[in-house]
Image 1 (cartoon, rainbow, N blue to C red):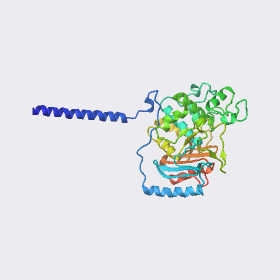
Image 2 (image 1 turned 90 degrees about the horizontal axis):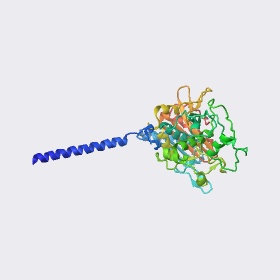
Image 3 (image 1 turned 135 degrees about the vertical axis):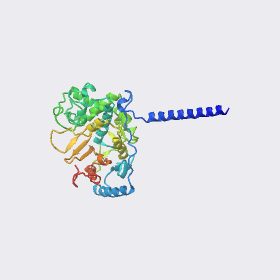
Image 4 (image 1 turned 30 degrees about the vertical axis):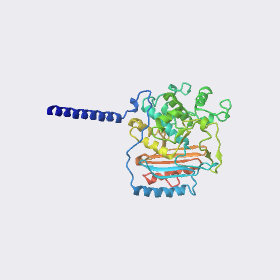
Length: 402
């Protein structure tokens, strides 16, 4: 009898060990990272948060807070910002401030959860979605745009050329603003309208494809259409699925123009006169994302996650492609840059649409994020780059705000 009991006990222990081992194996499988390229074709690649960053000391935070506060009071004297501003290191907020009104008519205050139009900083997010699709082998960087958009009339333009502004296309704002035979400005322009006009109205190139850099919003309006073709979703839904939802960016969205154009924060001239809606305000990809500094911080840190892109692709993002003229300024894949002779690199993207101004600065070497958003026009938004000298060896001058 004792032998039977001992055998049963041993069997029970072995069974428990086996079950425990299976559970551990299951957990290991659950934790295993599935690469974007290995995802099923019906599953979209998604951004993942960056976790376990090094904690800052209280003394460090206090010291930097004082320095940034001094800059803030000089740059936006007398509470003049009318927007949101944030500086963080390792994902931890060192300094944060919100001032003014989202809507001057009803005195709605701007807070940490107030979405503001981020203007051309939207291009960084559009590029990020495209890059995730490249990482997942749904798009090739050097694939012709005509593979996705059959109406597209410029056969030599590639996806890479849209990302780095070397397509040679003209800005849609210039070829739709005067000639009614091309477009009647009483009608709201859409991304598809831009494509159709270029394909049917003999809109010539500004310069030969691939010959030089020329910043052009049309590039990113076309990238948004490519995202829609590849994902079989609206740009609005695709951006939410690939970026906003996975990162918990709960106050970030692509404007639903017809539904929400009168419900979002308007923009103002420097003299506080409201700027109305015009016929270009429905186009997305190059603009029309609304967000907050805190949400953009989540986005920035996710771009530093090891799972963001394969190393070879990531290196291409931060490579300058406009080298036909020697200089320090350049443009990568959806990011501006300054490359100094000493090897130091500064990455950023600014935005300006109507009265909205925005600045996104990731100091990659120092794990610092600087974000400024405003709905009242001011070039002071762009001056936040001067804060980079508090964290690294960046050769900016006091008067350098461009």
